[in-house]
Length: 150
Image (cartoon, rainbow, N blue to C red; front, side, top):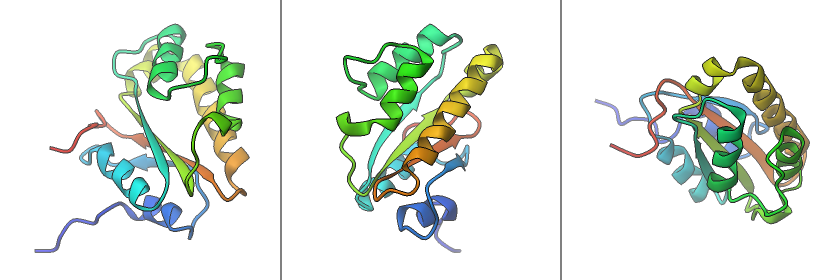
């Protein structure tokens, strides 16, 4: 029997610099804690954003503010979120930053127009940091997106 891969190849390639950071899927059967540990081991900083139970923009913004420890100037709107993710002076960089999203399917289904904005903001932020020495990668946990290791 072979041992399971430490981290899926797409994320491993981002963390070791072979592939530019992007928005990546994460297997439903793997806890995102594994991705965050791999990022930490590679010298990246990481944060988990669990959106379980979030069904509207206000709850999404509140969850972002707390989970990501956004600065006091975060205005809880789309522009402010975009500003926070493209001006990460408030967040230590290390070699890069990893954001792990879990439980997002309910919000995406409940507020599809808002979710489209979230996807755009995340993609723009990833693109903003792509050609820097401290990229931003986002993993989107499929399924329930377990946060903790079993």
